[in-house]
Length: 230
Image 1: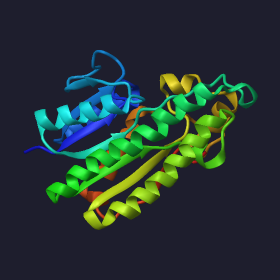
Image 2: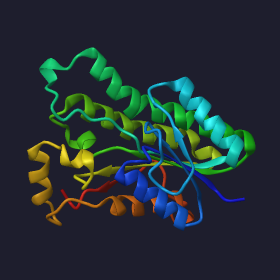
Image 3: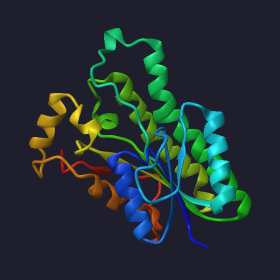
């Protein structure tokens, strides 16, 4: 039976690139996205990740249809580039944390419980951000991604005894729709990075593929910078 890999935010460019790459590597890929239609040639489930009941129902449906989820890529995220800390309303703060932190927490919990019950190993990858390491002008976003980095280390510590590895990627500026909306200061940082450019979605996908593969069998609790040396 093929290893089932679930990718959230699967309609975004990073999600699509990762779905393609894992499918090519032999995984049975299933995408989850808020969009009603999938963006690729893999099974698609529509889900608003801020709705935890819907998220649980979606994961259960995937398991019934395809089998045990062995790989989870918590990739979906929300970002409000025009927000100013002094004006951020509680609803926007909550919406950011619901998708960027709460959904990865409970999706990981759901998957881990079933892996442990089945006596199987697995791999979880979370999308953090360089904004979670150095701070961000979009304060609630930076805070959510800093929390993802800690969540990754904490989950990896808790789940390692069960053979479930948990890692994160911390992208810099990437050529995606979200990247295009990034404040100018971040774009200038990418120009001044060691590689002097923004990254491509496929360059993120290749690191995710490594982290979920047996080649990374001794890698857990890590956050990998994928930022061109910014």
